[in-house]
Image (cartoon, rainbow, N blue to C red; front, side, top):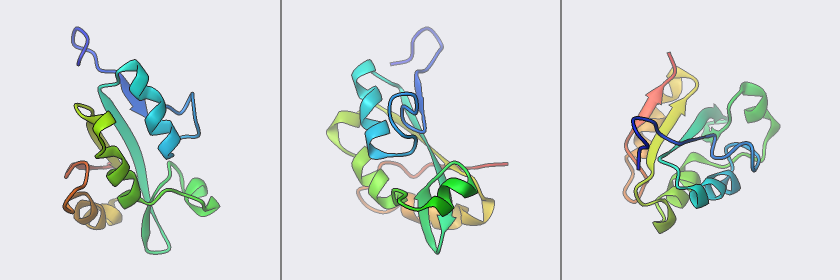
Length: 113
């Protein structure tokens, strides 16, 4: 769905329309035909959660990566490309394992450099 060399990317979902890195922020941009959804991943207490910063991860109430990927595997997201932004390189292996699980949205995890 790229528009003349550009892509419409939902950064953290649609963080201007709903709290970032939440299921609601993923649902909001579907109506405007996004090309990609970017999610931020951090490890918190041994679990991979959606959070942009350490503060957001520590705050709690975060969506688990596995739950987010299962949600994004749904029909409304057909044709939407993923970008899983791993904020801490040490979490990359765990993220790759989670992303590669059967039924997940994508096997792509991009470690932050």
